[in-house]
Image (tube, rainbow, N blue to C red; front, side, top):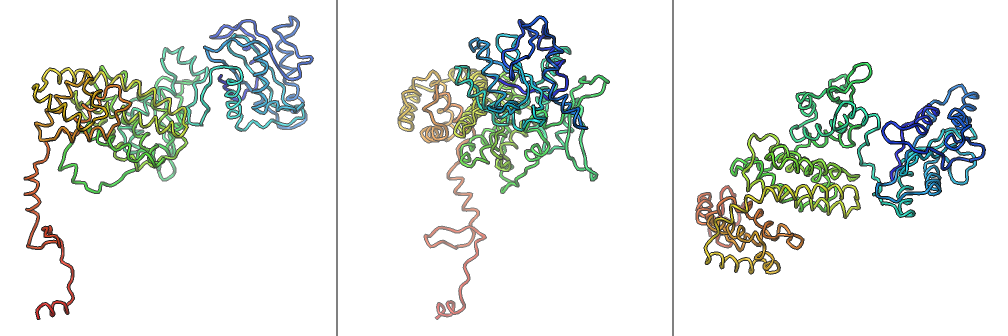
Length: 572
């Protein structure tokens, strides 16, 4: 059950005209009052042919008019409006049940507290089978204004209890991380202009698509402006960026002027301070030459970053930061993936948005590597080959599973559901990407003798899952991957153990497919030549210095200072 409190209004008669009218988009049938304050003497135009909307409006406005006549400052924002709608699959509620529900909601909101005879005047009008509208005038009988602060939270809590009491579909409790729902006016305007999305939803998608491309808030605004979006920065006297608003091309007001939406009104995590915290966090590399010595593609770099995701989930602030950056990586991958995979990946990115934010503060420095990988992918000019992309998508699937588990452990119901929705889309995309890779591998299986040896390796390395792996339809492809890795100098037994340790296989429906992507990634480079490595180490050693165990010591290791007296004794 959803109770959506609308912004305060000032025209009681106008709202009544809508509630008792034919409706603009939904058909209004048999409009009538099902509940209200002290029902005595209240006209109902839906049941009394002599009653008028003007009479009902005056009846509801009487405390407001009395207060305005006594005080110099008039009350103008006195109309409280809250539609209450049941889920489509819920049973049809009777008028009496809707009356009880309406009473509980106005009590929770503070409109008419339980046992308070001086509360506000209100009515509940039913003009459809699945919902009612509660209208109240927010001046009490004693002339005071009601306390409506946080009324939305209290009404939401009341709806969750009502769902249990009446056996209705139970929604998840709100956590203040949801974006704003489109207003009726926004939806009607989009329909009138032929837009599939409201302006705020459209702008949110564009901002999220731009985030992986930007290294600062200034870069983000520049990217949006280059994309044709109207940008309105707010700057201080020093020129520093203090805020921003964006507008959709063609979204104009009645005077023909561009309509702008502040970032915080588009989504709670798109305020300027939060964007700066995500985009402008940098962590210097301890070994800046490492990436030059071992060049990797952005796609490999992203998979490497995902491999370490599980190692830092115990710290909540680090986990939240990494999950936020994971959403950016999914978005960047969706933008650069082949066309036939983009629909599922974009759907995954959109579904994961709610999972990216929670009430847990994010320590954004912890996600620097993952965010860098997303940015590198967004800036790459070429896409990956099929096996590399399949490996990355498999890693994204596993990372999303970890994100869902973390949110579930923290009782983040909305975020858990969002991660699970994204997971379903990612799994479809991963399967589509892996299928041609498996077909290619299966066509060049190793010899019978090699396969028998590899079967022995599987049973020795992963005994608990060996039967499932060897009966998996993808086993022939896995055998080819292991044979290729062995040809590159790797040990299949060791690769299998490492892959099984990185991702548990108990919950994997097809364990061989999981192992294929893991082993292809870890064995992509030839195994190091141990003799060459030993020779390289010897070349760095100088002098006959040795440790106490006879090992040679690499320069520059300075010998410990020896007291002069000890030297004299040795000479003697």
